[in-house]
Length: 429
Ligand code: BJ8
Image (cartoon, rainbow, N blue to C red; front, side, top):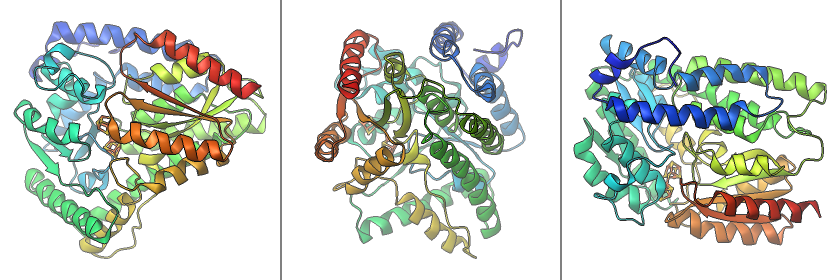
């Protein structure tokens, strides 16, 4: 996916990548990207920026990271939206998301993991073992977390595969004790970030980092709200792509690009231009996060004749909504505010977790959705179990729900297509 004519092979070799495997991955990704995104009709022109970012996601962006490292900055990788980007930026670090959304070297991953591990975990193991992920290779520190059992235990065999790994001990219940634990873990992360970067986290630096991340989340919020318009001004695939790129791109540049998309969408809405015809069934999708290049289900939904108008997931509103109060005058006060903000994330690893169902319902109402598609990765017990509650609550209130359990393989594509088409038909009738 690198820019034609640009040769990054020396950089990839220096990062320790397996060039043959990496070439094969890039060929497959490039084809998948063209088939999924560039074939869409009526895309906003401003999506060109995101096409470019994706074409350079293993090229120019990695070069930026390596150049920053040569200037003394550190790259911090993470797998979960509970890892505050604000803390990383406050020590002049660069935050990158490491979750992977494709099958790769699954057999090798299964030397470390049981077969009944979710595809997301197997995927980041596979990408690491096959030496095809420049983000993992470039990370000076990887921050993991004990959220679900698969990740919590998976980090044990993962530790020797990366330069340095810090595990956050996340609470599992939204109690005062849980919040105190989270606050303590953020302090521990802040200390480790200071140690690894040699920088001091002052209140002023933390406030400016919060401002950068708040601006990014406000832009994503603006995008989310514009999708309530009818006809929908942007496809769910493109909106998902923007949310995925949020984990890789420079945050200030990314914010400007999202606001440019929003400007264009506002013009479209004023002129009643939709990405699909008025009256197209509108869907909210909810569930496990969809990391690049996990586009299978959204593509099937939109090819089947519906438009996705919101994502309740960590690569979507669950991870990106809500800003942080930046009025605190001390590092302690700002860490309290950061804890308050991250406490509002409703991951299914919490028990009980009523806030997630409330958020899903609010999204369905706000976006005027006709139905909800709940997406779980196979073997993800937290989301699979919650999907039953969500289905019951929403169906009781008159919103049709389709529950999908899948993985990253293409094997169930046609079966999923049939189920999604039948669901859309149910909504139309
Ligand atoms: S805050 S959703 S990013 S933990 S799909 S690995 S849960 S078995 S990713 Fe997540 Fe943080 Fe929660 Fe969000 Fe486990 Fe499920 Fe696999 Fe998952």
